[in-house]
Image (cartoon, rainbow, N blue to C red; front, side):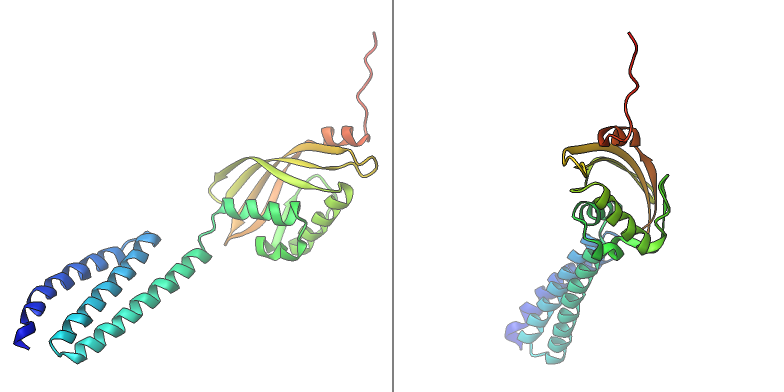
Length: 219
């Protein structure tokens, strides 16, 4: 054991430095920094296991290997949890508009909208909750084939996301391309859209659909 005394003598300081650094990183409020702390903890504990192995302190070897496993397990669990809840309001809104409105995949409405969702638009009442969203998504694609939404501007204000959209599709009769703008305000809570309101350039839409005509000017 005396032959390896220098390993214990100097190795203990290395473990001390690594342990302090690991504790500092783990105590951070930043998710990515904490993840580094878990890896540093695993490194310091594994180093301890190696050193205690040289000096035949097997109980400490086992203890440090167990702590190494716990630290690595904590890293992967926290990494997975962080990825699950790291979606921002912008990410949720962008994905909802792509999946539900542009691609028309109404089977995923529940991923983005809450059960108590409410819409405030100058349209007929399509209902509330997930059923209301589904009805509206089906109706707009029926009235305007090839319906899609493209985000031109997006602003975030606390729980609300303000989006300026270019909405486009095909004329239901002539199949000509039709486009108009919409300003939408979405409110999010617990990573779900709970309400949506806005203003649509219906004048441009109805004009392009031939539902109204521009007044003729007299010479």
